[in-house]
Length: 224
Image 1 (tube, one colour):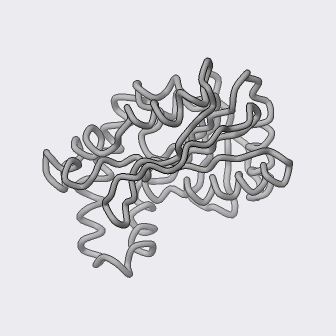
Image 2 (tube, helix red, strand yellow):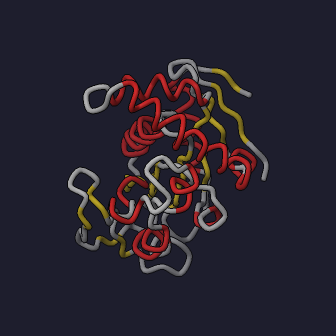
């Protein structure tokens, strides 16, 4: 395991992205629990890669949710529902991951859903350069039906209890502490435990970033 500064870690990640040799855009998964710091890391890495001249596509699993009316057949606090019923993986593959992958035509759409308005989206189709990088952040990205779609797999690891505290800070303007804690402890954290037990994501990751202290991270390469 390597310890270093945030900038050093981002430099190592950008080197890892640059070392991927594929004949299509490089598809990078940035996986991890809710509030682990995935979006922040993806945005920071995107800035580094763009400074290096790479064309970066930023996308997130939050833009591939099913509409709210379809997300809770097992109940709003169901951990199994969080894992199985929340995200539209079929559409994610069809409009984003497969077009950017082997044999794809590179014509993609980066989103299918607007969480703020709970509406389906159909953004314009864009053609990616062949050397583009897709940085895609989200939960459950190394599950069996997605794991082979990635050319580089990064897992952002944080103690699950820390994610509760981060969630309270992040969401306190829109939810009470009691509501946030209930959602985390009944739905989100047990769904992560289910994910770890069934998919073993840290074993499948190429790089694990330990993000308990974001300004003093540690990271390690894994051999798959």
